[in-house]
Every structure is written in structure tokens, then in C-alpha cells.
Image 1 (tube, rainbow, N blue to C red):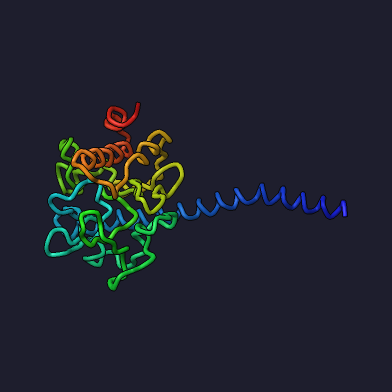
Image 2: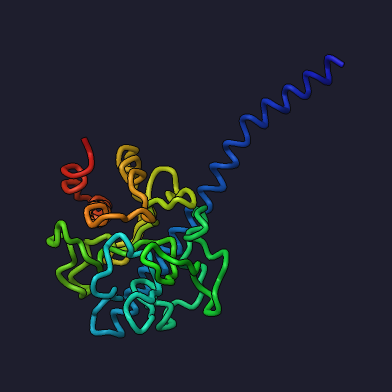
Amino acid sequence: MVELLVVIAIIALLMGILLPVLRSAKEQARKVVCLAHVKSLITGVHVYATDHDDNIPASIDGMNASWNFICWQTYDKPPRWVNLGRLYGTKIITDPEIFYCPSQRNKILQNTSPDEDGIGWTWISPTGNEERAISYMYGLLAEIRSMPELELESLKLSDLKTRALICDAFLPFKEGPVWAHPKGLSTGFGAGHVEFIKVDKEVIDAADHFDLLDQRSAQVRDQMDLFVAAMFELLAGKNQVMDEHFLH
């Protein structure tokens, strides 16, 4: 009996040691897949630019920077693919799963209920419009009213080599967690390379302060848009905007 209890205790100890290791290994594998998705997306942007006089996929006028995870929209007529969704609309990328991070647990940002086109969680946004969302953000082809100088000055890929253009979604929804990887963001750059960028906990905590489904005032939207701009600046190695406006 004593020997059996010793064996059970040893097994429990080993499980306590191995389970965190296994969880870490699974997350590392998902991170590798996520970086591969980002690489496919940034390569798709390059292909799109080659086909469109060096212009990268565009957003629509008036779309806030914090909504750049939208791939298809009904707000501006006619309904159409926008942002990274243009890569799917032009058939540069045909596999819907590439638009979704395997570590993303928020159902809005998962491909758990594909529509007839095979892509996107279809949902009614706070604006009352039907949208389709993906789990990667696109920076920054959108409106930043509080600091318009942070908006892209050019849509030409050749002018955006040092810019961070794609990363995991990081603004929260009421439906659940959004930060896919615990310590950073899979990031794609205009030059074509991808990298996992570590992000300080202070920045992650600042991101959790917002709620994308609670935009009751223009001031809230402006702050969210500015935070998105600051994050893409930070991913490109420029921390001034984040430090001045969101960190204390």
C-alpha cells in the first residue's frame, strides 16, 4: 500500500512537471504556425502590390484604425473586401485558415463558423453592420483623428519597408480573451520578413484597458485608434507614442 502511494505521488509529481512543458510546447508549435500565416499574408501583400502598381491592399474612407481586423464590410456600399480581406477577394490567398491565428481563443476572431465564402466570423458590429473579422490587424490604412500624422503617408509598398504592417489582434472583446500569445505579437514587415516581437506586460495591460465593443464616444474611439497606431510604431522599434500617451 505504501509503495502504491509512493508510485502515485511520483506520477503526480512528474505530471506536475510535464504538463507545463507540454503546454509550452503546444503554444510554441502554434506560434510557429502563426508566424507562417503572417509570412503568407505579408507575401500576399507583396504579390498584390506587384499586381497594383506597388499599392498595398486598401481600407475604406472613414474606417477607424482600431477596426483594421475587418476583412469584409457592409458599412460603405457596396459591401466588399477591405484591408487584408482583399488578398482573399483577389484570390491571392485562397485558404481561409491563413487569416486566423491558431492560438486565438476569441470566437469572433476564429474561423469557427465560416460563411458561404468560406472565410470569416460573421457578426453584427457595434455600428449595427454585418462584418467579417480575422485575427490579424493591418496597419495602418485607417483614420487616426487624434494624431493624423501617424497615418500612412503612402500606399506604395516601396515606401513601407521599415513599417510593421501585420500583427496579431490585441484589442479586447467582451466575448473573451484576444491576446493570442502570452508575451508578444507575430509581426510582418513591409520588407517581407516576419518576427515574433516581445511586448512588455505594461503595454499588454494598457491594451486590456480598451473594449472594442464599447465605443460610446468619439473620445474612446480616438484613444483606441491612437493605441493601435502606437502599437504598430512600437513593433517597428519606435516607442515614443506608446510611452507618451499610454505608459506611466
